[in-house]
Image (cartoon, rainbow, N blue to C red):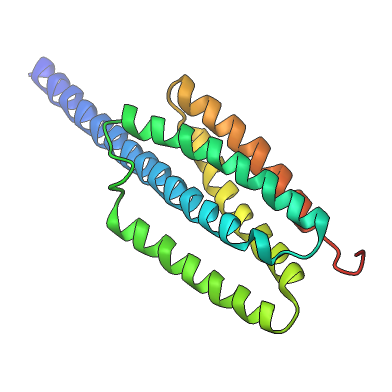
Length: 175
């Protein structure tokens, strides 16, 4: 009887561990897809808004961010492919949310451009966008798996933090 009870407990523990590992894997996968969608949307915003920026330092920061985003987008696509996912077919809910976020950001930036406040609004908006992206990246660091993910997370943290800090330091009075 004792051995049967011990076997049942062992089976229950194995099932619980499998459920926990599956849940963590799904959350990690959702975070990867969310960051991939966010980086793609940020790349679009950075590219589309480069010509709207008046301040040279801000334009340089934006240009550097654009180059970094190109590299990060390539890295995360490789990660998605190695995980068996198609980078062009991410979770629809995530893509829709990020597309709406980009649409809302575009409206804010268009309004700022009309009111001659583009540079300061853009710097603030990009600081926020990069902050939220970095927050998700920091969550992913807890569940990193493999050298590609480790490299991506290190590169993303360094590059996006530098850009965020540059945007945060922007002072529109120092033209």
